[in-house]
Length: 294
Figure 1 (spheres, rainbow, N blue to C red):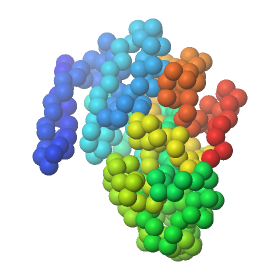
Figure 2: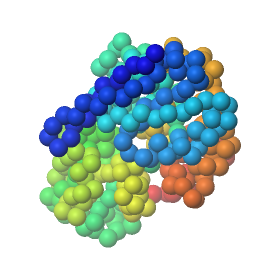
Figure 3: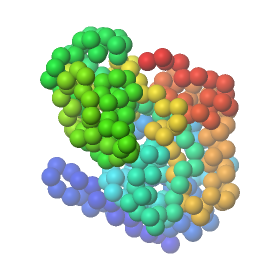
Figure 4: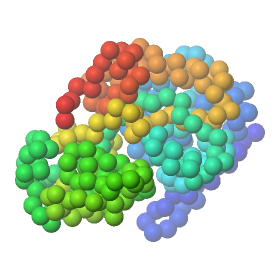
């Protein structure tokens, strides 16, 4: 049986309705097909292509990717069984989505090395956050992603490096720019669509940019400081339906990520992944630290 998946893609002020034919879930199980929902950015599709897919194919699986451009359907396709697993969000974002959709029965399978958020500036030629704090001027604009999960993340990041202080007693994971209690450098904090921030970096003082955006633009190593996340809460995750957790394909999928082959691919300088932030399980299993101190 073939199911048609309708995905709304917002394009140039209009809506394009894309119909993608895929076998339904039972047909995929019968034919050992794993369908993975991914975003349009190649970061994690490439990770699957080089580090996961070859292992699963040797075990007799067919691995297909379905690009989903609308964040509103990203998890819904997994909930409805249109895809088997997805990647393109961190655990904090998933927790936010699940809190607003209590009927969803999906959860993380495993965390993977991720391109982490960073602080960038074209205006100030500095190498450390201390130098940046000394360089910025009152009224300088700091641009942050405006979405409901990564705005709080950005504020927590900026608080951790001393650019602001959030109000006491609030849920920091729901914070907005209105929850800033102390602004010692008298900066102007602005919320902007995440994809716009790299484009306006030359017209602002400081921008908070997603790691995969910075990576794809070739500026990841220009970050003045990269976010440090010992909790893994902001690292990307593979997500599955709770009902599938004991399935053989899920075990094989997770084993592929836990494998030495996966590690060797991630650490291979031929690919971009060796510059990513390594999750705690990975650091413990392979005895590796995150090398950068910034």
